[in-house]
Length: 234
Image: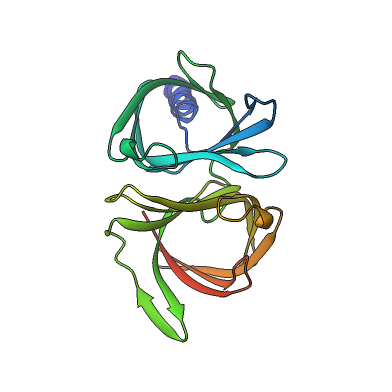
């Protein structure tokens, strides 16, 4: 009897994990003019984002994201930002998916993504909103419920930040790539950057710590300006 119960538990665990999109996924494909594109999707427990950019140059082609939920095979996403179609903001997008440990496939399309990670090992895996920053020695709090948001979403190895406004539906900017966390250092490697493609290829190192659900983040931006920020998990 114990063997049967254990077998059922293992099977349930495998099934649940196979249907869990949390982590990062990648699709390589070509543009109409033959350039290789990378599509990277990041899922936290509550939010998701996709970024499409040229593999060689890091030029951003498209990005969108928002909240998500999965019921059996049906994925429902409520759009919070969209670089090309702001009228989609606030709307729900519903489609069917097939998910296992290796790939995520959108049914009735040619979109098939392969898993990069499952949310590990990154200590900062999740979706975060900037909730405070320090400038000239003064702490400036941000109301994270306001429409103007700066979100950073991370899997175990990938990150993307996005600045946008859910009320005006305006998209401001985004960037992303890979990251590591080790010995109190958070290091980003930039693979795409919508505002300035010259930042692609840069490594940025920050001091960080987690304190009561807050991510304290201190270092220098890609422009060399000092950064001292606090992020709150969504």
